[in-house]
Image 1 (tube, rainbow, N blue to C red):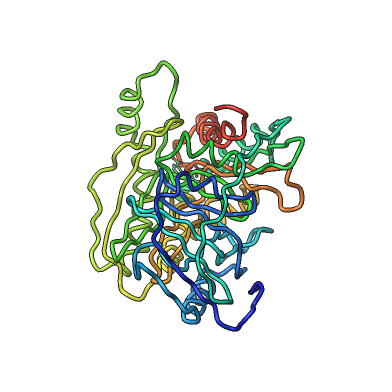
Image 2 (cartoon, rainbow, N blue to C red):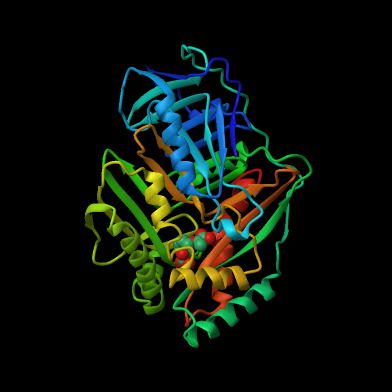
Length: 417
Ligand SMILES: C=C(O[C@H]1C=CC=C(C(=O)O)[C@@H]1O)C(=O)O
């Protein structure tokens, strides 16, 4: 479905100017707006001039290319990463098994910052002269916050994990990522800017996003491209951080765990396989490093390469999704096992979330550590977390790991961190 909002004249115009540092970008957000932020870099996107809803990333990519060809673009910084008109969106993990929609949106105003440079872009059907919008008052925390079980209970989920380990031992697959959900309820509508600000404060090194009611802070980047340089941060293999236990000791456990190293290797190999044909050169480190976050330690590998000209980051994300970090190995078998046994509609969880500019450069992260506000009842939010299941997985340890992965969103919804 394609929605074009308020077509005054037939042609879209975009105008981009340099601006002085505008301060915290989140101050410009209304609850309905969007953002994609890492530390102080990224953008907030206000209003909407066009929206495309489609389950297919290929279709969405073609739609954006068509939009770009029709935009009359004026810029004080032509071609600079992220400046000018852009589109952002969120795609479902498995379009064949979900009630949720995938969406790509073109905003009316973009306020962005990248490596110390700030800009303002305005897009509209009439000629536009960009003006910095006013800041908004701070969001209020949710009241009466409580959490309850999602689609299945904890013990039912551990049963599903146990069954999956048996299937894996029987040779049906090598790795299957299983997820679960919990529901957050509040007395009044949740203002997504509240958890967003809390996530930014605690998980600033992650990619923090708010798009169409989906809010989260992910440490995993599926595909990022800035002027040809393409990178991917692959994560798989996790230990929760434990109070009173030295991180170095936990990290040592992680890097010497055969199960976690193998789980990680499946994820890295799946990204290598899917991007190999699209990158002119690819560098893959020999061994993973340990990424330390406030809640967990992950095995991490940063892959980089030079991307073929002409291909957008959304096309690359389409090729790389779903990686074995969120699906499993072999991919098709794992996807079917998930659809059959997980007992959860993942919606946009674990799908690509991000943005791209008119050149097709951009960032498509993996939508992890997130919650989706219910479109018909904003007092409800569904939180998701999963873990890679291997033959040697222990169901209780997997439950504890998913609890640790819920903790960024659970803490972000509370009044104080
Ligand atoms: C599926 C999730 O994490 C993935 C990313 C990092 C580590 C993972 C793991 O160790 O299982 C998962 O592959 C999640 O956060 O819900």
